[in-house]
Image (cartoon, helix red, strand yellow):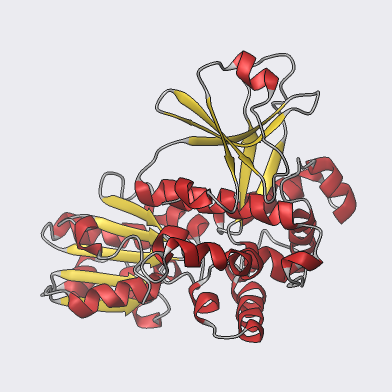
Length: 375
């Protein structure tokens, strides 16, 4: 069994507060919750936001109904809580009127759940984001040598739990394809604001081919035959639904630095490959550099979240094409990471980087040393 970073959940629970666990569908939120409940000594009630009766009770806003629903329990756990209208108001009633109770709410759709719980639960919640399985989590099953040996597998198929647990190549392809086709866009396509699932899918495919490259919103709009505002709105939804991550440009207003462009990476490389139906081995493809860059960016994001590293993330590039793939601004310093799948020579920091930010650090990440930055 792979030990997840947030296990056990006891350390995050507090009386009178709601523990909110976000994350993409199929990353293991329900499994994490059920494993905790299987070992807790607390008297708990487990329910689902898909339960119509629960939806009616908790969305009623009636104190008698809501408090009667939780009476006698030490812990209330609601899976897929975003399915309950006004869930934030209901949880506020519960924790305000029952200050000794503990509450866990999981949700796959951040733009729905965060919008519902954000303001009502101000000062009454703690938020965790669960990602596809991180390299550091896999150390509970594999040693560092074995992880490096399996690296091509992670680049091609990603790190969703059921994909990692699938025993064969064909089973992995089937699993990640099912996730991409049946679960990935489920929440987004349920919204009235998304008028065309085809446009959304085509946008994702365009992003898949441009991983690691600066993206022009107007060019995307032209290729899709929609206006720029629609592209921006769809990109925002894809970010909030844990499909892609936007990386802005770092600049301190130096004349030669690019400051108004963005790159987009996928939360999981397997999803990216499933969208373009490309599962060839690494020696048979021309996008290994893109996959490696996306993989390191996503894994570094997981590492920061799980290790409590607070940082702003950017890429850096000048008009004369000096660049660094990932820049973290933290603790009053800059840390640059350049991703190289197979460096043929020693890679040095760009001249403009050294001259402009003399105190900044610079590292080159390769398949040989990447775990040093992720564990």
